[in-house]
Length: 173
View 1 (cartoon, helix red, strand yellow):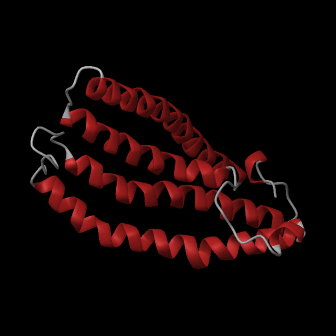
View 2 (cartoon, helix red, strand yellow):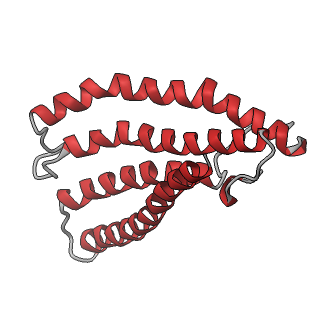
């Protein structure tokens, strides 16, 4: 179980590094847009749409990474004071009762939406924009898959704690 949890963690650790790179790219792109607009008096729609694509990808890739490092907001009234065993029970229940159904719901209901977009290679949002809206829409189920992967790690680490073991480093309560 620990090996599988560590493999899940490594996937989202990689996605976190990718998100870091996308954040840097986003700043450079936005700076370039401002420079073009206010210094040179011109604009490129493809760059403006590029900011939208990079911004969306940044959030998708960072979601599982943030869960890996317990950075998502949670109601922490009881959790922080609870024992590691109780925290493991809360985490396991949260994954099984909330995270998994929500992610499966997102995948199920976005699948045909994304498939239709891929079937026609859906074009740009604006004339002169990026001709790959289908890639942007693909981020929807990808978000759910990456979140499910990290949810699996969280659930496995919770089971490890409940069995008296030690979770992987990032999952330690």
